[in-house]
Length: 371
Image (cartoon, rainbow, N blue to C red; front, side):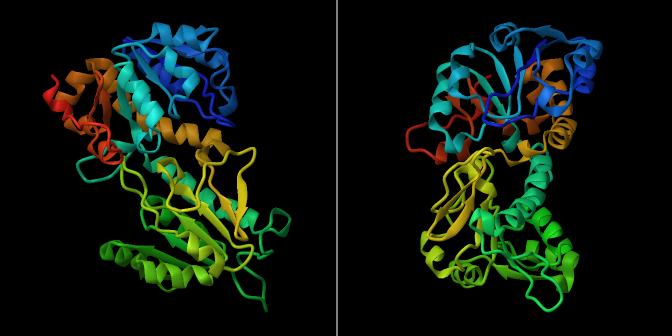
């Protein structure tokens, strides 16, 4: 198969979909690999490294899109890339369609086989292609939240750990999944007072076993959230329903009840955000202030640490991608039915139920009925 990778064009996105080591794996399996010149520079990978691994460099993204049968990316394609779609193309990347109707329409109109990292669910219920970025985003959320608590950014001027004789910061984490657990790990390590909430009692019991008396666990409901955020210095929103729009559990009315200069970090922004006041921001202008509360809502948080993020992501994606390249998407799915869960669009049909449920204008089609 002809496999390709282009430079990401999203604002301040420096990750890349393939490393030179990935190229070596695909080329070693007999595939032709095409890389846009300069695609890996932001993650620290040179064109010479890609060539040495067996890739063919092309000068423009259009040349790569026009050549390949399977495109491997990091972020969802942007409008400038929609005209580059061609029928039957396998697009293997994060899509986040539930928050992006124009992209959904473009993939359907282009009859692209959209294979989304974020909806691939393993037999044990894990989300292996989302997990590495969830780990990074969770850890970054505390790092970024700590920074924007500084007074010069509009924050209240609180140090998370405090010092002897001063109060520690109160951190509230909404969601106890992979993002929330990693946020909790860093928050506890920095010495803050941490409350973590989830709707799953078993998950809370697990977190209580791991962190013990260093955290407070609470069932996530409106009453508990409202009470907790009143005293919070930093709120981390990290709820997830794979492929579906995030529920708006952080209400606008809470802002007036919170401490002026408190910070809200919405890690769920790729899926529309879990805050009623969330709007997407970018690394070059990451925050806005509403009702005195600093909002950090960057849609590609792991892009801030692209070297770590690229290596972590591609470690996870290459095995599934190689199955698709070796056998074709259809046969790969038949041999490993886990791959069906990742297909969001196919031959002009919307094939992810959670995405279809996020809109009222698409009909869901079970991809297994299409071949």
